Length: 98
Image (cartoon, rainbow, N blue to C red; front, side, top):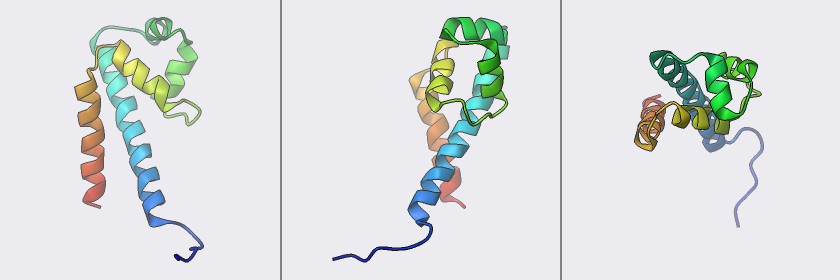
């Protein structure tokens, strides 16, 4: 039978870092796509059924904004599932090199 470990678990720390980096890339990409399509934060918020301040918080990396809202934002402004998958794979690849 295995033994319990105390302290940080390296696998969990790596997974957490991957999620945080994925969120950062998703926020950046969302803003790029929104601006490229000529959408204001208010227009994007309307598409999402959210508020302009929520979109602003998302783009400013506020931790209260869910990954779900970021993904819905990307999809609503035209990002494909393939683009989102590549964004995640790039993050995983970058983490593997660390």
